[in-house]
Structures are given as C-alpha cells and as structure tokens.
Length: 138
Image (cartoon, rainbow, N blue to C red; front, side, top):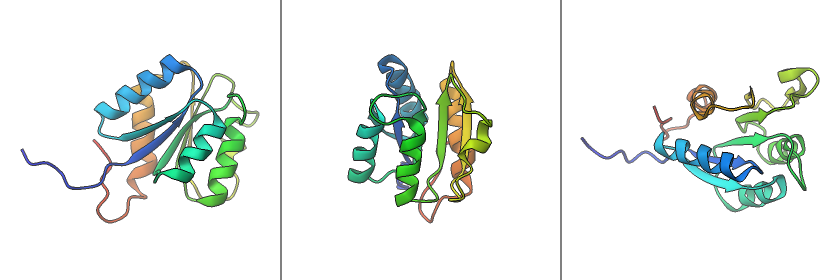
C-alpha cells in the first residue's frame, strides 16, 4: 500500500472542554485529518492567522470569544470557510442563525457529540470544496 502525497486537510478545533477537545483531536487524527486545537475563540483566531486551516469545528459557548464571534471573524478573512458547530445550546433559528451570506458551508451538531458525527459532517462539507491535490480523508 502506497503513501498518499496529498496534503492533509487541516481542521481548527475550538473547544474549551479539555477532555472533549482531546477526544475529538484523537478521532480526527485517526480519520486522517491534521488538527490544531484551541481552548477558546481568541486562541482559535490567533491559530487561524498563524496556520493554514481548511475547516473550523467550534463550540458556541467559550470564554473570551464565543463561537458566533469566531465564525464571523474567520469568515471575514475567508468567506468560504467550512464550519461544523458543536453546541448544547443551539441558537434561536437553528442552522439559519449562521446564514451570514458568506457562502461557507455550515453544519450544526448538538451535544453530546459523537466524534464520528463530526467526521461525517466534515467530510460532507469538504467534499465539494477540495482543490486540486487535496483529498478528504475517508
């Protein structure tokens, strides 16, 4: 079996619950994604500025900068950024609350989260948007 030369899809995970973040990181790595962890929205925004990121997985309720603010900030820089939102407290209007007109795909998952659901959501929103040379992990 050969080793793929395709670049790994890099996912920025913003989650303030340490154990949940570590479990999600482990599952994403096993599924073939590259992962950058951030424990709040501000740290995620800094990490986004410092590293190439293909998608965002974020909680909504976090200290310093919440998930909605993070999504707005990152999509101001990259309007087509795919986002998976994980929350125990969905916004009024559900998925429609994220209709910011930027064109970025968004999926909303309710906590408690099964990492396989996050992986499936990422695969779905990334499959159509991959550029040449990028491969969505299967």
